[in-house]
Image (tube, rainbow, N blue to C red; front, side, top):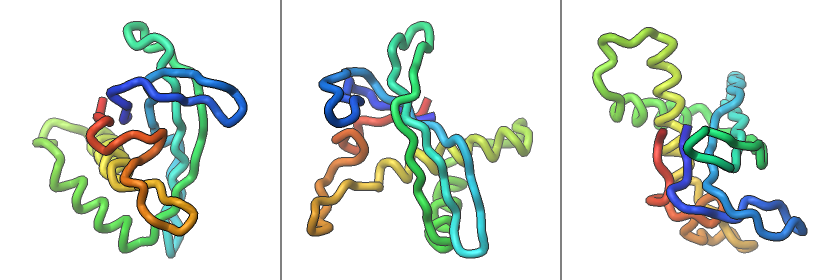
Length: 131
């Protein structure tokens, strides 16, 4: 999981302002011959101490195989010693690291396709962390 380090407005348009930290989790991975599609759930953290959260949004992101391979290799290079981890634990950690890297580099763009230098919810890349 990846979460914001600051409060953001997680409300949908016309819902006003709802401030909370947000958490991102990969809910589903679908691989085909040409690409990989991730379903990413966005949660608003209502009570961090007691881990109370509510689903705020769901997005899908599709990346091509070359991007997937590069992201996978980069995530593997960032992994700690996995000697005492099960294959399942290793894959889950690799997904979490991959999501973190992806979110840090998935910049929002304006109507002309120019980068806005912010990521989801108007966050800067240094305002998210792995948990």
